[in-house]
Length: 304
Image 1: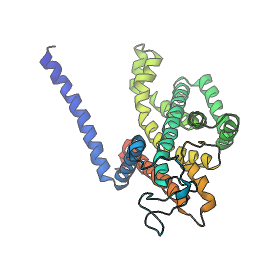
Image 2: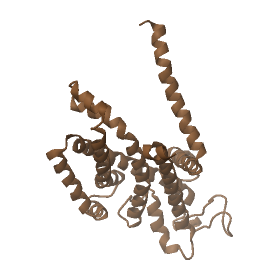
Image 3: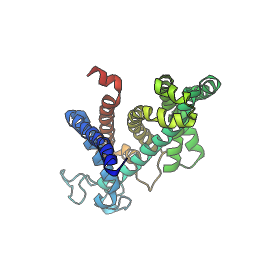
Image 4: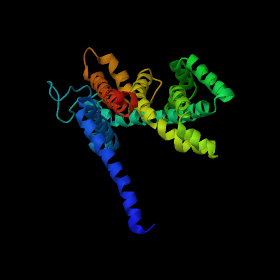
């Protein structure tokens, strides 16, 4: 085969990829919730990456002379502190911007960890079945029998809370969801003709799982992961609110809620704006996750 023929063979592959990309963009623009979710998620990621540039003040800098200043549009407010200051004179807007990093770090990396464990367990259990399936599923049942929040609280009480500890403990408590879903997908996929054909020609089990089964479960993983990030952000904020999550001086939205809960009656902005940030971020991720489910789920596509 000469070079011209190679180019001709490769062109349709590239065109297919481009067509698939533009199809996704078209489907995204056709969905109001999907578009809104994408805009919110993109904005949150952008803020997290460029927090040190976007934040007008040092989020940890105390200024007791400017403590409990209201937002700029209220009496006594100042454009220097657009969303006001807290009980130590720290800029609320800057703290919210920096808190975005913590929420995304914990949310994304704990989901990645849970996904790696869950996919590995789910593929092994579904593909091999028998004794291996029984052992792995009993382990899954054992994890499901333990209240996840209780397990997290015990671990955080033993180890000093930090971003890394939170990522690990949340990842190790959420992997069972992936394992059960992936196992069900693998039980169906391994009965298909292309898997049986690969076995018949002597393809190694590891190769079949990696090249034939894994690509067919990735869409389910993406959908579950997207929605799991939202619940993980709420969990991290809840733990920080209880004082068992991210510790000062690291800024977190949950920690800001803790600082502001005693001032709700008089200085409402201390807790309100971090709460709004959590709500908007979680809604954006949920909207994007719902759109991804509609696009990637073949059962949903079949009804359209």
